[in-house]
Length: 115
Image (cartoon, rainbow, N blue to C red):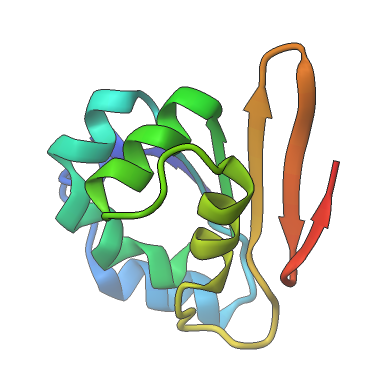
């Protein structure tokens, strides 16, 4: 299942996410846009325990950091923070991918940084 932050307030029930977790489906979330990280901050925090893969670019990562009182200049720390957030399904870690334009993409998998 793949969804944008802006779709979180659609009529999606948490029982559906429980169903996905029960049957070992992966849930991916894109940060969508920098303004969405501020506008839907609470929704993102609520849904993040169910998310296995998070995608975003450096502008969205900086907006997420600002909305969550993190260091806005360090994309790697922001990605690590997202990767360390609690998960409902502890069987697998979260993968965080942050694109940085012409710079190498930051990938966090189980707390390990890959570029």
